Image (cartoon, rainbow, N blue to C red; front, side, top):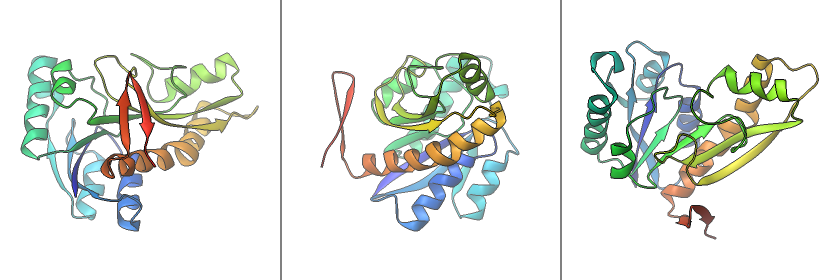
Length: 208
């Protein structure tokens, strides 16, 4: 049984999707053992508590720079004996020292079809605003391994979502979450925990 540590910064909707998948048995051979938040008092911590999951707050504002903060997060991850670390709305880009310590053991969900609308500065509603500005007909979500390059790691799963003519950034954000993020993130986590993901030459292969 693999230990999953989830990193959060806000409401925790993706965390809830993972909790629901775990409780329904959709995540095989893994369990969420700890939730780490970059801010105190966020609703994601309440979600964890309601389901008996332990949590830690490592507040970004209490550290003078990203190096010291990243080291604190890494120390916590190692103390929790994490096999997999999942970014679920975690709003801090950690120093590369973390991913170097956990190669191909950290994954993130991004609300677009990478390589579109991704990279530094593309998060939250900004992603959907840009998609609508460009007039794309299809958007979606991507789960990828985390590397030193923001949103640049090997892609694990993607799922497309239709863009409607009357969409606002808010309606599109909601539909991408419901139809894509909340489905492929638990699926990718389960594939990892079942040892079905193999990375070769920056590509992810899913074993039968």
